[in-house]
Amino acid sequence: MGNFLAEKLMQGLGLLLSTEEKTDFRLTPVPPRAGKIKRSGWDQIEYLAKILPKQKALKKNISIKQYLKRLPSASQKDLNKESRLQNLKGKIIVNNHYLKDKKRNRIPKTVILFDDVYTTGATMEACAATLKSWGAERVLGICLCYD
Image 1 (tube, helix red, strand yellow):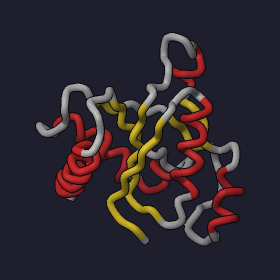
Image 2 (image 1 turned 90 degrees about the vertical axis):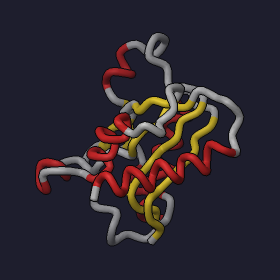
Image 3 (image 1 turned 90 degrees about the horizontal axis):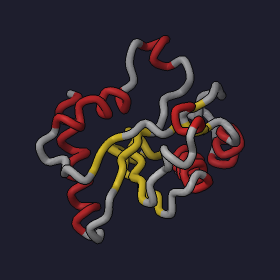
Image 4 (image 1 turned 135 degrees about the horizontal axis):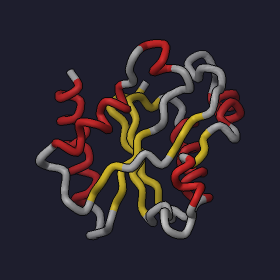
């Protein structure tokens, strides 16, 4: 199943990037809820982040970096959009690796976030805001499903 989803994500990226100028992009996964991997044993987006680099269609100028981390918060599933935005306020941060040396490990100008499901956009908005506060000028998003 993971390989199928990786293939579909690559197709979507191909469509997205076909309209873009030749720019140096970085892909970054939306970070999983704190404790999700511990509870369920895996996260589908984390898995995709591991297998996407093996995809032959991934262009050499595009790499995957895990820029973001999610701090503990309530599950987004049962919240409305306004509550989802409030729930994630201050909960999406840059990984410690990027905090240590902001000059050397800068967030690139263009980042593409990827996630499995887009419901209200609150998670993408919180991730994009964090990336922009660290120097990203453009943040694009791509999801596998819309709910």
